[in-house]
Each structure stands twice: as structure tokens, then as C-alpha cells.
Length: 206
Image (cartoon, rainbow, N blue to C red):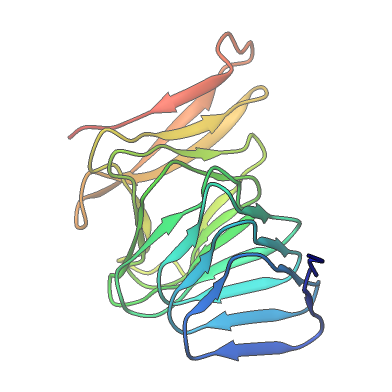
């Protein structure tokens, strides 16, 4: 039996999907300048491959099965909407992540996650819930909250999971964490000049 691979390229355009985005074997590439907007869930299962060099916007759950492949490229994943949702990266990294949810909506990690690029909180009250899972940030990751509203987003260490920051030298890093959905505190740390441990692992318990 001959098998065909379906290649889907999205380039210089915005494609909106009202229904759930589900695929289990195709290769989907979002090219630079293109946006895939999904108003419900994204599920990448089976042997499916998603390569993101553009922008993925999702208002529902984002699931990348362990057997599937999510290639971050230089792309952005933007979480939108007002519903509480979940993120399962299947062990693959995301590049840039934007938390654009509003109305204090959250994204809860179902599995450990890694951000290889930057993390921004642009939606009022948007939060990432770690639960039992670690969120790992690359050594070059910059975390920002725009605008500087009174209920800006942050990372909630509400379980055994930790915010893990890779370090490559000296400097300052601002850890935007809180222990629940309403208790927020910036933890600012000077990174050591001589790094003895590969990872600086942080978990605050108030």
C-alpha cells in the first residue's frame, strides 16, 4: 500500500478554524508571516508534525501527543480567549509564547513544558498554572508583562512543579511567580558570576 504525506503550508495569511484542529499524520507548516487561529482545541496526534515559523493562536486546549512532533521554529504560540485551558507539549519545546487570555483566564500545564524563546503576558490577569509540572525557560528567555496593568499575568506555582531558569552567566532575572491565582510577587535574583549548577530551580511557597 502506498502512503501519501499531506503537506499543508500556511504563508502570509491568516487561517481561522471555528471547529477543533485535529490531525494525526500530516505535516503542517506555518510559515513566517502566517497565522493559524483556532477558536477551540488543537490536537496533534499520531505521527503528525506541526512546524511553526509564524503564529498559532488557540483559545482552547493545546495537545501535542508524545508520538507527534511539534517543531517550534522561530514561531509564536498565542493563547487567547476567556476560558481556562490546558497545555500538553508532549516533550517538545515552544519558542515564543504569549499569554493573551483575559478575564483572569489560565493555561494549566498537563505535562512539563519548555520555552526556548521569550514569554510575554499581554492579557489582563492571564496566568500559567504549573501544578505538578515544571516550566523550563532557556538561558536567553526574557519574560515581560505588557501593559503594566495591576492584574498583569504571572506564573502560578500551585503544586510540586517549579519555574526552572537555565543560566549561562551573571546578570539579573525577574521571576514573575505567585502561589495562587490572586497572590503575586516578583522574585528578583542576581545570577551568579560562576555557575556551579546548570539549572537555577526556583519554587516559592508563601
